[in-house]
Length: 215
Ligand SMILES: [Zn+2]
Image 1 (cartoon, rainbow, N blue to C red):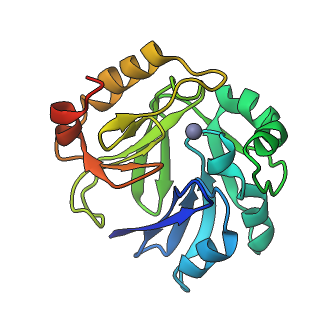
Image 2: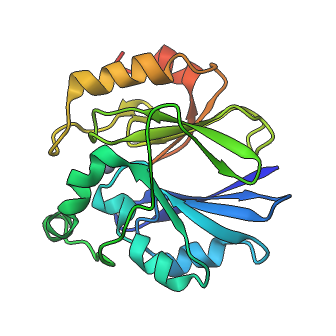
């Protein structure tokens, strides 16, 4: 079973998530935006954190990466799309602009691209490149329903929200590209797929196809 623990962090209430494969006791942290003590407190005692997955490198999603690496005894893989290097370069400026506590620069140890696979235990997530909110934005799809939601699930970052989509007015943003990413890569997923967005409540692909005002 894959457990999913959601921890809203920072003043932006960004949904950091811990994924725990109960059998392997392997765990991954997705988008550690900050508040590292709360993230560590939510990590089950038996679980070994092995990686950090980054949907995109805006400050509210990655501000705590360096601090989390520093807080763990064993080395963590840091997984992200190469195209977001441009955003990672300007993290200090992003932090200044948004008055954010930034825990410092970090290295991406594994770059991923469209249709790559990343795993926690034996749960394989397919990487979907979904640019538009950020140029190197990825969404991560798990077809295996042996998880908390008993349904396929999608870590949607800031591409798709309940009743909304990501903003596209930040550097590298592109509204048409985001609409195309959602239509071509996300709306073809099974309707019952639980969408876990970077901010706000979960939704499903079927619900958003029917009700999202941007489509
Ligand atoms: Zn963002």
